[in-house]
Length: 161
Image 1: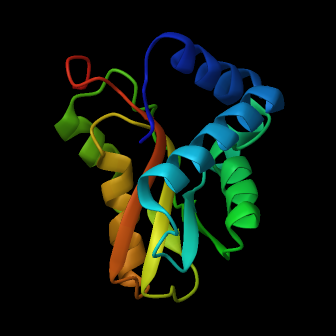
Image 2 (image 1 turned 90 degrees about the vertical axis):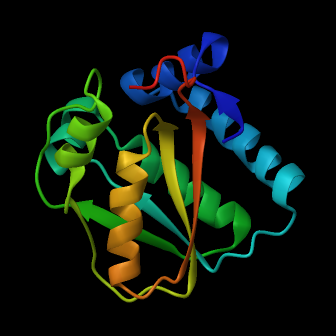
């Protein structure tokens, strides 16, 4: 995670996520690609997996921000993109405790096809890691043995529930 979810980065992510500002998304994508390159060099992954929004929530927002980022990141890194679909609509994670977040996303994702050994999981903001943990399980069920997680930002520990 290249950034903490606070200040200008939080505002940029919110504009992208809740107002569908593609320009903000483009800035965030470039920052993420630059941070990955600086920290890791060539990524030892064979594919990118996104945690899709439920269809209804994506329709309400006007787009799926993680899928939008995933498509562009996969293109930039020349990697295939796999999608983890949500099996049911869940309440928002905002304001939930870590345990409640884990219950909220338990068995929520399904990856339809077999995955390569090493995948990169992509999300926008990581708070407790519950979403990425649930996504990781779904990926392992489809054959991924090495899972790397990547998010635009992490909620500061003092604010994480």
